[in-house]
Amino acid sequence: MKNKYVAGILAILLGDLGIHKFYLGKIGSGILYLLFCWTGIPAIIGLIEGIIYLCTDDETFQVKYCSMPPSGDVNKNAVEGGNTENQHTDESHMDDLHVDNNDINMI
Image (cartoon, rainbow, N blue to C red; front, side, top):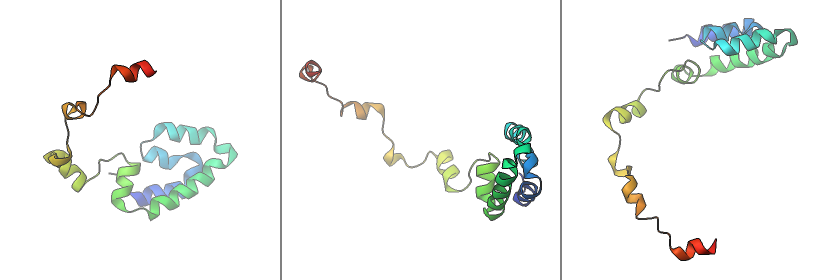
């Protein structure tokens, strides 16, 4: 579990080198930041990302930026099988599909 405050401070202070991306485990993005650090563009993006990291709540940060699975009702429904009222089988949808030879001949 990564700390959003560490990631935010790294992004603001060392965002031009992509250190925050390496911290979050996004090695490819970190290398991309390093390759373009001479342009100054990664520094601007890092500043913006740092502010976003610091303003995001902890759970959203973990799910969005640290590749953590969401917690709460979403996982609970997935484990318990969710609501079975809305689940349909393929067979029930086959009744809705009806093609006549006349429809094919029109094409």
